[in-house]
Image (cartoon, rainbow, N blue to C red; front, side, top):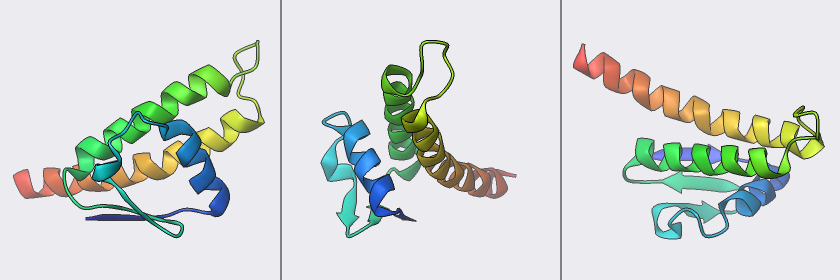
Length: 96
């Protein structure tokens, strides 16, 4: 199980990015906490991909530098990337 706490702003960004792109049955949102109970790595990778796509569509200036929203999206995505790395690290320890 993955339990991720977000600020209210991060949760709002999360909702903007996700729209209908990730199956809402795969995640549970309680206040400012996101819970993923099954297929954690796969779901985290989907979320990371969706946030990255939103970043590419909305988070860049014309010179391809991140705008204010882009910087927030980078920070948000880093939260999910860290969680995915934790899971990958656990799997590699078990396999080794």
